[in-house]
Image (cartoon, rainbow, N blue to C red; front, side, top):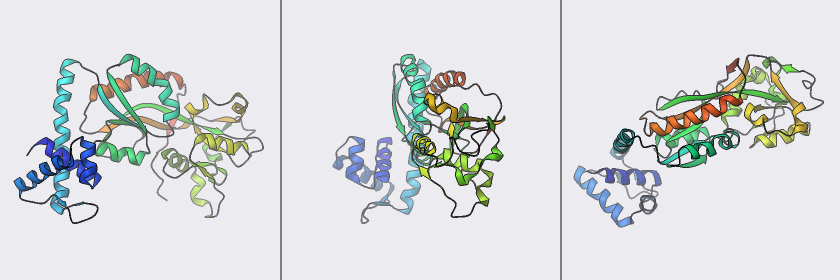
Length: 314
């Protein structure tokens, strides 16, 4: 049994196809198939049911894949130990970022990080929180930036910053004349929300205590981007809530529509998250150091109340 064989098994389990798995592993399909067959012969079991389309794991195969993932991850730790011993901070690092953080945070830290750590090859992808968690567990991401807490035993979290919510209230809205607002002023029935799947949406819903009392046919309009929510709000279709960093680049003529909360301001916790196996910690710590230093200087709020990004349980 070799680590390479286990790596091939994981690839086939993920892709449910020998040809696609071989392409991902940069080997020929006969080579990959032969190595997996050797492993099955050595163990005297079948890992895959090849009669199914797409290919499926056998019952024992599912248990083997779980253990194989642990073994492959631990094998990566050996290189990690060597890198740390040599003080080397470099190599490929796959980072996921949720959509409501990516457009504001990435421009703030990327240039500084690349300049400070030129040997790190960042591969960055915008992903939803659910996809991020799955990818970290499957070993396809080294780390991610997401709203926390996530309450997942397989994931570790390092808080980067706390980002307050800011209300965007257009003219002629019932709350526009208020200099500051309270959470109790919010009503989900006139709130523009992000589409389902965004953790910021779930945080807003959790914040709106009146949500559970609204009738099922209450008017709601949802969008896939914060920029679209602002435009819809300008058309008089309702108010919305923005993450604080999104307000820094808002148009000058739209700033009068920004209304801050009375303290403690509702806020989200944004963290660097990674697998509990703690691989590539030297790069994770480098990211935390650069991002925290830059963002905390941009957010001046002192008294905040963290809102859970998890869907509310009604």
